[in-house]
Every structure is written in structure tokens, then in C-alpha cells.
Length: 629
Image (cartoon, rainbow, N blue to C red; front, side, top):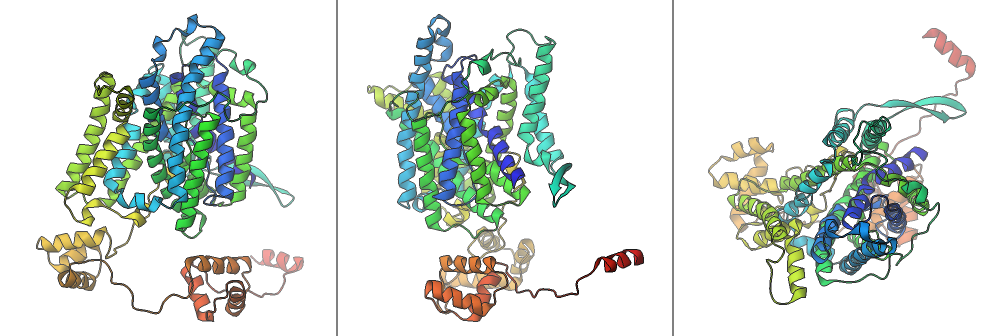
């Protein structure tokens, strides 16, 4: 239990800290300003608070809430459009109060935009509009939206890594080695069990690849700094932050409005809505994957709506507290569940409480700020690469033999990179005569995920083509998981078997229409020829390839009642089917047969077992057995 919450805590710290450090450079916070540490502490405090809300009131799964890279791009676009670049601001000629007012003014604009955008997420969640939204968001819209989040930040990563390419490459190599090459390597650790000392083998490299890479690279920078092997002023020096740890307060409680009253701009709010949409898509997939990792049944629609609504409240709190970012589900921590096999909400809640205490300790946040910039750039390179790969992985649901789909994909990716790059070089390209409209259009056109996602969404929903060309529906979208880190890369994505309403059925029909025989199609798809024959006959009769509605008796229990029955069986594994039937009827008022109880439990993998009764072995018996063997 103790090791599990430590893993959740350390994984979240390694994946979340780089976001406020990156934003600090665009907020014009000096490298030696203790406000950088205060910003990191605020992020820790907020993540812990929202995680408690999500596990208690939201989707109620052991899922951790963290910052989201989707909010980084609109935040940068807002700060570079509405405000002057930090390089043009004479920070060295300003007083301490003026420098503080400069970065807090920028932060208040970001806060206001995030706060307004969070209202959209709250409405989507608590009104149940998430399902309606996902019905029109196809894989060809998700792919450019998510992939361009990572691809569009390549120049930023290159700029940060240019401070010392050697350290940045070292960090990238270490992350790759730990998460991929050494993922199955275990290290024995001493543990105290049952009044004796034992050794437990732990997947250290699989659980903490980012933290290990940062720690080693950070140590290398410390050694190079100690022996003056790095030139003065190098971003790779560990003393580049000065005495920021000494200046930071020991204890400081973050609170709403600590940077001032948020200010709202239409351009920033509209840009943040695009980030909210990407965050919702990511979180829905994470809910289903987390349930699968913990052995829980798929979350019902009501739980998904609550989860998205609570995330909206979390994003609202992020805007009020001033984290400079929103909130989403942490895919990295879902990967930790797959490693530890511990899917307890209590473990996650303990990690959340520790996060809150870490946010109160100002020295702790200042410590993370001293990580050299090239090390952070190496972490960004891996994270953004994984985000891009996750976006491209949605093409698993797309028929890429269709020229229509290839056109939509290529067009959205190419122009998703081209248009924002051109607008960034032509800041005055949009001139409608209304300043507010100019700002809104300019900010939106600088967001690659918006441009590419909108083009993919528009073309895929308007170009003629069958449903099989657009990819998946709402149910398939729920099985997607955005996993932007090495830990979550260990998760196994669900590969759907042959289903008559799925993509394989569509491919079978396409092959039959191209002139292939039914036996050849069956061999290619690995199914029985009779399946292909029935599919083709149904398609010839009514033009459909979906299953006809069942004609059997109506199911006596709902999904919620089935879950309650499984809980009863889990709480008392010695109960008989008759006892479970009686308890179930008293609690729900629904009368079912003993066989129905058995069927429901069999569907969930429960099987009846009889306890083994054997004579108790005495110490003399054991000694005799050992001597015999």
C-alpha cells in the first residue's frame, strides 16, 4: 500500500512539474524569482485537491488529476498575441514590484480564459452532452487534434534543448532506456513482512522512467557545475536559479485570487475551449482504461458525465487558483495501476493528500524549479512524441485504403501545421476592423490542434462516404486512451474481434464487392465462411451490416443491479446462489432465479469454488516431509 501511493505521487510529480516551468518563461518570470516555485506549489496543491474531488464525487475510479499539455498551446498563443514577447520587456530595468505586476498581469489573463472555458466543460458534463459531442467526433478529427498538440511544439523543444544538446539527448536516451529496454527488469528491495525481513522485486525502471532520467541528468549537471566544466550562464548549470530555495517560504497555502482578480479576454477564452474539447476526449478514454485495469465494470454514462463535470470544476479551480493550466486525467498513473495491480481509490487519495501537503511547502516547489532547462527539454521531447503517437494511433479505427480518408487525414495534418506557422510570422494578417474579432481569429489560427481538428471534423462529417469510412462511433471512442508517457505505454489497447457492426465487417463487404470469393475473405479475416455468408446475405436483403435486434426475453436486471450483485458476491465469497438471490431481492425488490444469479456472475468471470478441506499438518509432519523429499 505504501509503495503504491508513492508511485502515484512520484509519477505525477515527474509528469506535471515541467508544465509550470515551461509557462514561467512565457509569463516573464525571472529564473531567480521565487514565484516560479510558488507556481509549482500551486499546481501540486490543485492536483491533490481535484484528485480527491474526482475519486469521491466524480467518476469514483482510482484516477489521478493532473495538468494537461493541451492547454499549453492556447496559453502560449494568448500570451504572444495579446502581450509583448518577454525578450522585448526590459525586466532588468524594472523594480521588483513592476516585474511582479508584469507576470501577474499575464497570469490573470490566462486565469480568466481558463475560468470561462471551464464553464463549457461543466455544462458538457452535468447536462450529459458529452455523448452528443462524441457522436460527431470521429477518428479523423481526433487524430489531427491530438497529434498536432505534440508535433506543433517541436520548435519550442528544440529552442529549450539548444541550451545544451548533450544534456537534453542524455535525458531522452535515459527515458527511452528505462521505459523500453529495461521495462521488464526488476530490482530487489528489502521489505518487512510478518515479523521477518524479505525481498520484493520492484519494476523500478517501468514505474519511474522520467524521474530516474531527470535525477541522473540533474546529477550530471551538478557534477559539471561543481567542477566548472560548464560556461557561466549556461542553462545546464544547477546554479542558474541562484538562491531561489533560500528565498522561498517554508509554508504558504495557495488560495483563489492569489495573483489578483482574473481578467477575461474573448480571444483567450475561445482558444481554451479547444483545449477543453481535447481534454474531454482524452479523459473519456482514460475512464474506460482505468476501469479495465482495476477489474471494474465499464463506467456507465452517468459516471462519465460526473467525471467530466468534476474535471470542469477542477479546471475552474485551476483558473481561480492560478495554475496557468487546466486539469485532466493522468494516463501515466493508470499505467502505474497496470504495474502494481493495486486499483484502490484509497491509495490514490493518500497520494492526493501528500500532494496537497507538498503544495503547502514552498521549499519543495522551489526545489523542482532548479532542474536545468535542457533536462526539462529532454522530458518534453519524449512527452510530446508520445502525445503525437497517441493521436496517430487512432488511425487503427480508420480504413486507410479509402482515398477519401487519406485525403482528409493528409489535408488536416498539413494545414494544421502550415496555417499556424504562417499566422505566427504575419501577426497583422487578420484585419477585420474590429480589434476583438482580430484577436479571436488570430489566436484560433495559431492553434494547430484547432485548425487541424476543425478541418478533419468538417471534412469527415461533410464528405460523402459510408459510416465505415468515418471510423468509429461513440462506443469505440470510449476505448481510446491518450497515454503520453512511457509508463502508460505499457497498457495494452483493446483489439476488437470480428463484429458484424465493426470495421472488419465493412472491410469484408468491400472485399466481396471487389470480386473476392467468400472463402478468400473468410481466410483473410480469420473467421468462418458461414459468418461471411450470413453477412453478405443480410447486406443483399436490407443493405445493412449491423446486427438485428434480439428477439429474446427482456433482461430482468439493469447494469447497475448487475454491478450490485457482483459486489455482493465479492464481499462474501462463500455465499451460495440462493443466499445471493435472497440478499439481492431484499435490496432491490427484483426477483430473479438462482440461474440468473449464476449467469450474471459468470459474465464477470466469477466461478463457484468449493473450499479444500485437508488435515492440518503438525511440525512433525512437515519435518518428515522435508526429510523424505
